[in-house]
Length: 448
Image 1: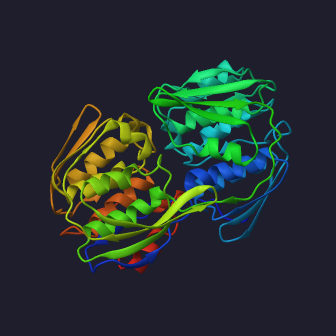
Image 2: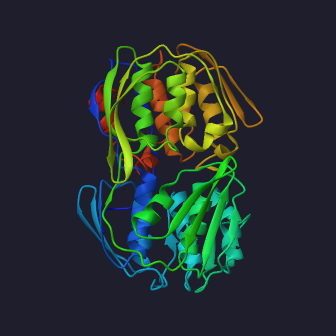
């Protein structure tokens, strides 16, 4: 791998300034969730996995480095094009050093599932933000399968030394919250189990792991279970190397989409956005708010439905976003709060408890950012209420707490506010959207 993973030592602040309307075409970077999994499935498969459109953000590259430490040969062929030669499940190497995931919560948690289901020991660590994130919910089912936690930080946090088990016990596990990361860790550990591993989730979470298991030849069955789903995986499959085409990330697309909705006169085309129904909660909510978004050219790419979205500036109205929609837009609430500030009337977002354990306490960080911009709001339990006035004063400085989505959301707010909005650091944006600034500037955004 030839892409640097170094982090800037000093914070890099940035201001967004209201300017001209946004115009043009834009393709978001590859989907982050699928990119993580492309590296991991390449590791677990004997043979050559070719990936097109991989997100080359820091989070994903950390996962690639971890796969390399476990025995994969990884080569970058060109922008977004990667080749992975894996040893296959059951033949993983014990890493020589600590697996440093930086800020990558998804990568670290999914890789705990991989290690937990194999007879190797690995130490997981990351940056200050990752060390604050709870890992007990991942470790609990892995311990039921036979893995051992040798050491851990306060409250079950990184650094964590995990000893996997060569012959994990197949289990039926009911996830305590709707979480693709918990589900995926159990299924990845279950790949090496003799028998059937099952996960039951009360609410459906994003299903990329199930789809990629099937894509690589595993026997996996998904059936309805009340309001949620049951996923059954037969262990010890012979995974077959398959190409992976990564669609554009709807979570990254959210930023230019909302920017075009709130900057007067804007008209942009966002190309190739993944339309998986478990990832389109923000789009549904924006349409409920009266957003002028036309869905064009629906098609299949790499096993996922994608479409182009034509987005034009719109007069938005406040809505109630139900808690049942949270799993399908859990990463998009910060930018939804920005859209809500420019809507007319009250927007209430229900059931945001999972925002408290993301890269930052996103619920608190969003509220602080709204305060900095002079937007009336309240937190009631796990609900966020935003009193939209159709405009924003702006003029504030937002603490990002090393959270890329907080940084991008409030920069978008500044593009339509009466006064510039500033964030204290944009370095971490590279974890998910390295080209955010130049891509937005090509559409007409002004930063300084």
